[in-house]
Image 1: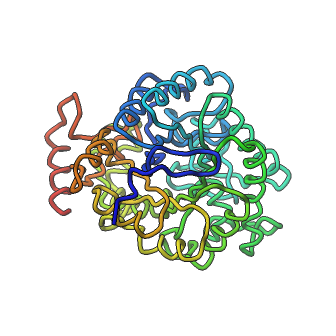
Image 2: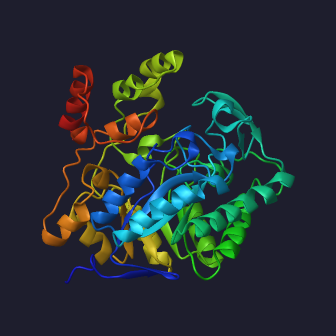
Length: 407
């Protein structure tokens, strides 16, 4: 069977030159919540490496939606910087997408400028902070913030937006019975828990119009007991299909409850705390990190079994993400009916991986899943340990080697 990998694919009004997308893994390259030269250089390198579309990660639709101080915040002041970034991507022949979302309770007042808000009130151990549940009267304005962010993305020149409805962020917090304890019309039954997502998608599709592709990242499973499972998430997917979304990115996991279900493997706790500046957080995570962030075994294409169930039920375009590091497995995924694939760690390890796959049928990137890139990302920019300019301390080298030896 001839490979589909390097054939064009269409999502709504957008046609990509091939079926690869750089997934919206948080780069941590936006000091001051604005695009930087480092962000531009990274996405340009991925575009030059042959990707069909590269996705700028995790842009907050409001200041209250920020969970990192090096995260994009969509506002008019950053449009000139985004245009410069998009021009660089387009010059290399790739399309440019941006992920839009709100972190919900995954923040702290020192970052988002207010008491963090979520689907329900409570305490977030991972910040740590108290959280205020959003009032029903606040939800229409929050939904409109997503639409305004889509309009800003169009003004900047993006070809597509990806709405983040997974991983335990705000939309996901409304969807999941684990985080939605509301007693009003936005809580209880799945129909009620989908209401906020419906409001967001109405605003997004209205803002996107006929000239911007809309993708949605959603969970197939939350990844922990008491979270959403496929019986409910399949209904969420069908609702998104009815909303007019042009494609779904099928993922899973909760950053607050099952972070390694999202990424798989083991979190290098020593590497993670090495870059932290807050002393009490550094030592707290070092002592409790193994308990807070339990490992989940990595295997190539780890979401595929679940994703195939969605492929069997849905007619809309589906994008596979999760553990793709070889052309052989990518071809297998595409042959199973997925319209495109997303990758992140493989492209951080080798920005030119897509071009190499064009030349080598057996191409495989050299990422060994130590997750150093993610551990580092919480404090400074995401980077692969194999390509650092600075010398790693011996203790971090030892930790990485130990984790990679297990794989």
